[in-house]
Length: 188
Image 1 (tube, rainbow, N blue to C red):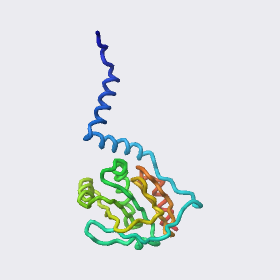
Image 2: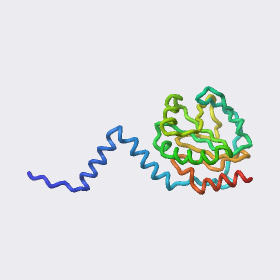
Image 3: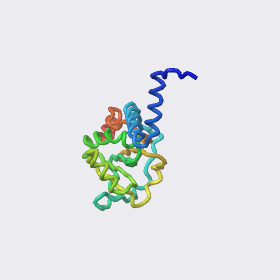
Image 4: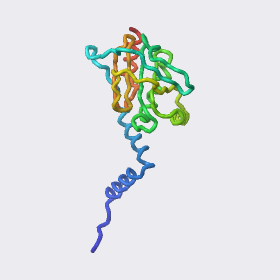
């Protein structure tokens, strides 16, 4: 029995399959793919008549220093709430764009990054990636309007408490479209 000489495409296919099977290479590949997808996805504004309002701001969180934060403090402000995890490839993929947005808007809007992981893991991730935003862990249940079934899940809320953007999955939060939306909300 004679074997055919393998084609280059067959070899590449086998390498890709092998790389995806090996656990240590799977996550970086997923992050890379999600970054490519996120680069072209800019969250869209919800049509005004379909925007839901937050019914209550009663939600308690805690930062890595053990300081309590009541979401009530954000009432009347523009708020970006991001639910994420350090193990989540789409979350990791969108974090650089969120950091860039945070760098430019941290004193204009409130950023509330929420993760349920141990602060040991969160702080290690934040430090390793040189992010400088504060992360909170929930102490009480979040408002039902958030309906977080998957992460990353990000909400942009206006001063009146209406959800202007609601996006599940990786996205480019530093896009001109998002910045224009935030700038409009600031001017209102």
